[in-house]
Image (cartoon, rainbow, N blue to C red; front, top):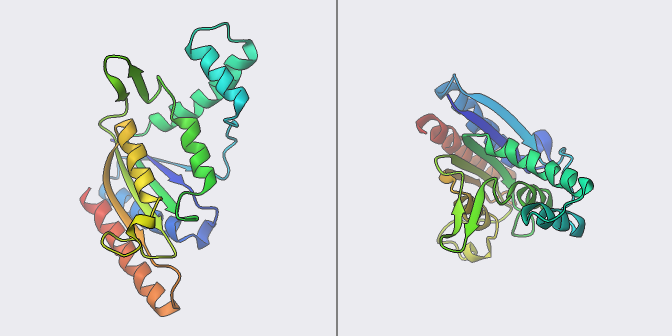
Length: 209
């Protein structure tokens, strides 16, 4: 039995195409893995701590075993709590729309909060960076107005999927599959066909994973 965490990065609700893709994947996953538990994190509804100068100071005061003040310790624990919730999952499903060729800023904020030394990665002088979440899997459900598929002229303008792939590698999470619903900036008939094909791929991926 696995614990599945759906991280929703779209504020679009039921109108969100990336969420529609993720929901189709998750419905098929439940049918294929009826014993798994599920949790959804909507990054737009989370009370995330600001990762500002104050948080950075708290981070180094705690990690470098300096005399962290009670306020700094409490501030750092807010980030650790969010990180530990993320780390508890066995399977991750991300629904991510493309914004300005990259990620929605609230997803980047969430990533910056959960990616913490000692929680899901570590560093040493002898080994360098080491991931701590090996053995876990992730699935990317993404949407974009343009077509950034491999081999497309616009492929290298895509900072959405490459960023997510690299971040997952950094933590040791295996990217087990991804489905793109694109392009969404097209005529209604073409969009309906693109949507149906992407949803079918998402369902198939869940059923065989």
